Image (tube, rainbow, N blue to C red; front, top):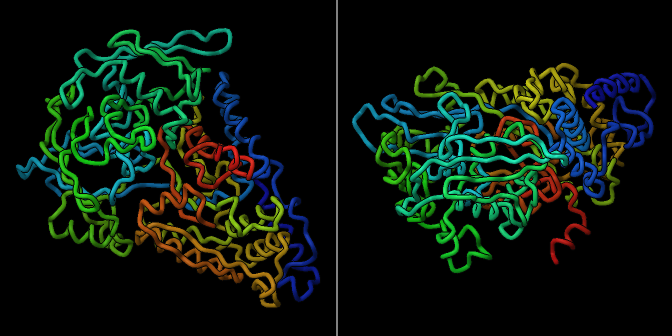
Length: 586
């Protein structure tokens, strides 16, 4: 697949010397079978996706880490072959903090840690904007980066990240792992610190982790991240995890795990208090309802003491946090907004001390401002097609893939990086980000030139050939072109792009809108507020949508397993055919 674009581009150059009829458009001749344009890795993303699901299961069970890395490349080959995932660039992150704010630290996964902040102006309250109203604060149910930031500041897990981005023990003192059993399974034994407490002063024990992990993995909870427990023996509803005493947690995995500390540091693996969860009247049908108002019980550096929905939140220092003596500020106040301009104006007016979003048109002037920070992230900003969209009605799986691949190669990623992102983003030509570890002591993709699936520079360096190739893909899908190379009125493409508010997201959409129009594709842009946006994507109520995925831990499986059929993060709706929908309805 990684050489397919170059081969097709060469073929298009040959075709450009051939005679063509008026319906073919300039430089494109003859009928082309859609399947002949696709990689050998291609499988039907709706009706044949079990192959991918089985491959992910095989990867998670593989004990030979070199073989595992090879299988992960194979999985990415499959993922990229159908065109539903269109990578735009590899993430970095920006934020602004006042000069008197010190010791905020961030990691590659977008978490911001505030518990060690020092305010040199003498204040003990840090005023922050991360995003708008959070969808969930329950760590088992959250699936957004801003929600994860709130989680790491209000809950604590067995492991966490230090200021250098390394996993270190938090509530745990360490763990041991057994030798693999005959079936390949391994047993982990984690020792917790003595004297741990919840924010209400009650004892926090290993039994709380047993409850929380079983709850997060259970089908009844329907956590978007429940699949992260799929390597546990007994997943999903009989998870092999048990507390043998107050400070000992034992769990079994089906195979050794190269990223176990990353899992234990991930919010889905944080503990929640059973009596707090189940005191909510509708806890069985609304599992996150227990923490949708201020005052809920947690166990991290701060506790939520005030919440005016859609406006603000207040978090105060938790006196029962096990490292409370190292928490250096008394209070966090959060401005809830996704309006870049309003956020930036609040910062300039000195109404907030820390923000992680600015208007796109302000970035250029801010680059030389010492309060403006650019940091590394590990993730990919991308576009997702809904594999079940009505856009593909009447098309074969191969024809639908050709349609999506045409969109992919029309995008001017350099423009989006340089004029929209503006902070040194790297144009993406594969989904797995540059620099991610491969789980076998190496790097999965050392540079953007490695493991490339298409030439992201071609739309600028070979524009006519690339436009011809896009037409070729679309002709293979049954579309016709006029003598000017635009889609014929007989076979138009009209599509709606779904995005949340945000000047950068909208600017990127507008750039693609212009790119697609080059061959007559008409795209409208629909902006919706954040929580509506999340739900519309999750439920598959879109044709094409803006997406972004910051890794949850440093291993490619995290970027790949989210696209299994049953994953709560499978916005592309892979594998979700009518039979799957019928089974879910029962």
